[in-house]
Length: 185
Image 1 (cartoon, one colour):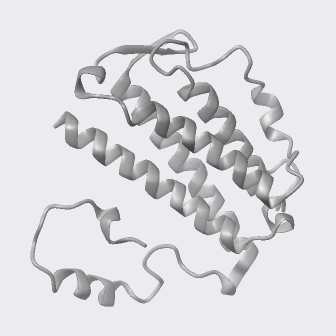
Image 2 (cartoon, one colour):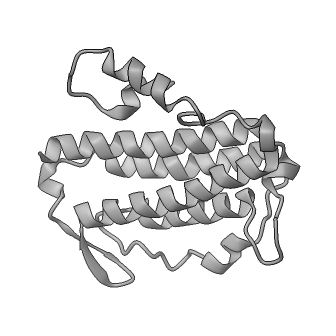
């Protein structure tokens, strides 16, 4: 079970990263920085927050508290990206930190206790906490991208009105065990 958990959770993280990547590919820097209301977060600000969280949580994941002294969380909500390339480079740095920490884990690590703000978590609990946190914010990123692009937004999942077609294609295949992301481009 644990081996399938680790491979599955890595695929889930890869999936959420890909949703962000596909959103960034469609947006200009100005669109990434668009705020829809006063005190709302743009895609760029959400990216900055996710990256700050990733670097804090996943640096020395097994040996140091996940809330690092050097993290300046409040500054994550101030957009300082000067270019789209800088935003994407930052995004990739956060994900690389995550994957560098999680990829070498074994099932023996899953019940180890790590700390976030002095609160103990098993490694499994900490991974689940971060997966849910990133999915929440990446959903916001995709939604904001869709708002910016309007009718020019190509769906990143099953397009409206295509559920029957999608299901017919899936049910036309033999049953087999695989991860849902295996079919995604």
